[in-house]
Amino acid sequence: MKAEYLDYRRITGQNELFLRYLYDFESVAQWYPGGPPELETLARRAEKLIRNGRKYPRHALSTSLERFNRRVGAGEAALENIQKLRDPSTVAVVTGQQVGLFGGPALAIHKALTAVSLTRRLRAVGIQAIPVFWLASDDSDYAEVASVRLLGEDGELLTLLHPPPADNGTRMVGSILLNDVSALLDELESKVVRGEFRHLVLDRLRNTYSRGRTFSEAFGAYMAALFQEQGLVLYDALTAGIKDQLTAAYETVIKKRKDIAERLQHRSQQLEQAKLNPQVQVSPEETLLFLFEGEHRYKLDFLGGRFKTRGEATREFSEDELLDLVRQDPEAVGPNVLLRPILQDLLFPTVAYVAGPAETAYFAQLSAIACYGDVEPMVFPRVGLTLIDAKTKRLFEKYHVGVEDIVNASPQDTVYRFAKDTEAGGLIRDFEALQATVEARVAEIEDQMISIDPGMAQLLRNSEAKMIYQVKKVRDRFVRNFALQSSQLARHVAFLHNSVYPEQTLQERLINFNHFLILEGPSLIGRILDAIQPFCKEHQILYVSTS
Image (cartoon, rainbow, N blue to C red):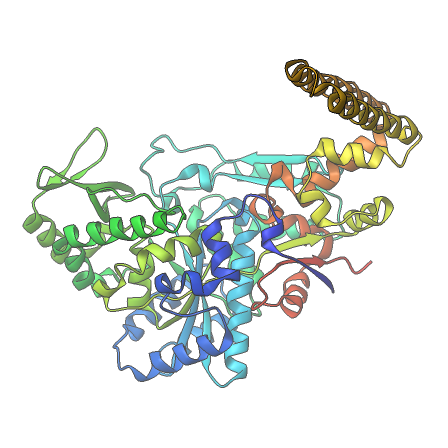
């Protein structure tokens, strides 16, 4: 599989803290005590985890994991990995994501691929590691999971949307039952690309996203089917049933609430002084906790000396009352994004958490409070991927462009570039020559005028900007009209931008992985695993087509 690499600093809009983590680690090392993302670092950490004598709830965790993984149809490789977790010499590479419809955006799959790849490399140096995917089913942002984006036959963006539940807002998404899935799958079948493996992928989706399953169960079944051979272990935050193992951690968070909030605010100030934006905004009222009631969760704040939920039906507790609740019913509370990785490291012997750019950034904040859990979270940036199919590759060759040309241009810029190689190219170059002539003549006249009448020289300079604006305006309108008349060029530009950089964002953040499975088939997972370089700092571009 052909691979190319693109420096993240050459892609607009990247998180500055993420970029420093990748390319200037020493400048942020004080906030990432786990060390740089290198194999040697991970191996040393794994050996430390095995030697340090911490008691992980391996038996209870394995029993819970086996129950959920069997329910969603995990293969023998995953079940064997769960049994390995009982062994004190086994460590875990953990990642996770919201339980998106039909797998969500491709980045969820890329996280799992990175976790599997890292476990393989750790095993190669003698460390028994397993890959774990944490299903963030206790999240309540339904908009994050309810829709899926794919590409149609001509590269048009398709959106499929699962209808919201009546009690949307505080409902934990993993608990929501699927409905009208057949209608969504029929729509998918009628609109997606006519790839060789279309029916195989659709059959898999019908089997995994079947009516009556929850979002959590369907996502788990989908991931289990996709990673049958790789042994990906699935942890469901809603059904794990092992929060009793975290009672002491929750007690600490409640008792030390003020200290924790102050530490987080101080860390935010440190980041801001370094001209970095804190990924998570932390107020003095922060508790890091949600209150769970049935299938709903409510953010807990600390106001007026009491812990209070947000929303219309306010619940409130004194510190002692909340401590009593946690001791009697550990399932009654849950963590926010800054606390979750700490709890994860108390449950799993975690070598590293495989994270996206935003998550990598907020690990700089949570390291300020990790001491309260007596852990040292280690983050590892997931492999960033743009997958190039056969049609995209042909268009790249036709127009002599690549991924970088698309991600750093607007569709209008690309239309202009492509049009220059058509019969309209002569006129476009004439417009450029006209602009150059105007600029040159204005500069000549201004040089002569400035010593005689500086005010008029400035007026000429201002007039030049207006003239150039009008020339560009006419030129751009001409190019747009030409593209509309040349329907093939317009289609090709739309196809390339939708498939490579849809809606001005990286492909993996928007396009569903099933698009590529439809074109390339089930072997794609294994082929990508063989091709990716997890310790490479660059965004990786894979030409996945075998044709």
